[in-house]
Image 1 (spheres, helix red, strand yellow):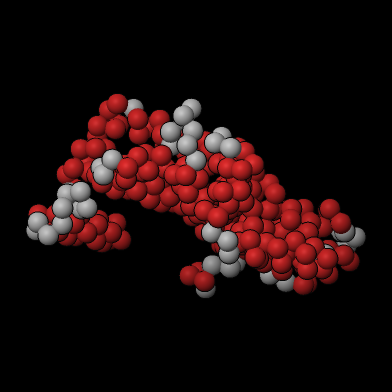
Image 2 (cartoon, one colour; image 1 turned 90 degrees about the vertical axis):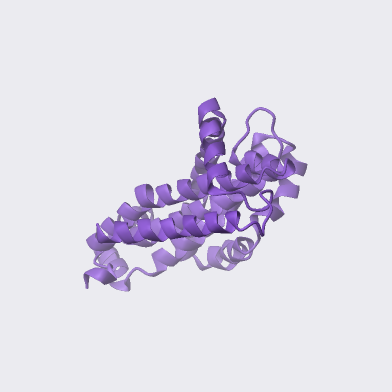
Length: 257
């Protein structure tokens, strides 16, 4: 309860400071909309359904691309942690590609897929795969060697050792890596939706882009707040409970020490 009150007070102060800056007259409303104008846009966009529709389109793209990235990155990470050949080839490639900003994939996506859903999914997958692979590789290498030795002693090898020993023991690290991959997927999708124009479905990125084109800063700020809120909810609802459970289950929670 105390933490919730502190958080509420903190954000109340932020909103009050924002309102004071808007009332000061130093910034044009075009550059700094007031909290009231942002709230009016949110209410209007909720009433006409445009915000909910854009959020649904964006989440659908995000979940599909993220699932594909995890499906590719997870086995690659396990292979990289086991075989030196994969580590020295695909692992090095993953380290390099992870540093590449997601927006750099957009020209290639447009040339290969055109203005289509495929271009957006390609950008999201490329933004997710490598971070998940590196996290999986790191998690698998963090397993105490005694686990692998005990598994070999009891006859576990190959696919059985991966699925029954390596993967379960590295789960706390994998969840953290999947959360990181989710963040990369969000950034990739926003870049793709801003630059890839699809008339069949407008997402939050398109609303952000059109708000900038129309100098409607209340729309830009409102959409940014929605994106931040969805990211926070995903962390609190999807990832944080699993992280806490797995760290307690595996005895790696520093706060419980």
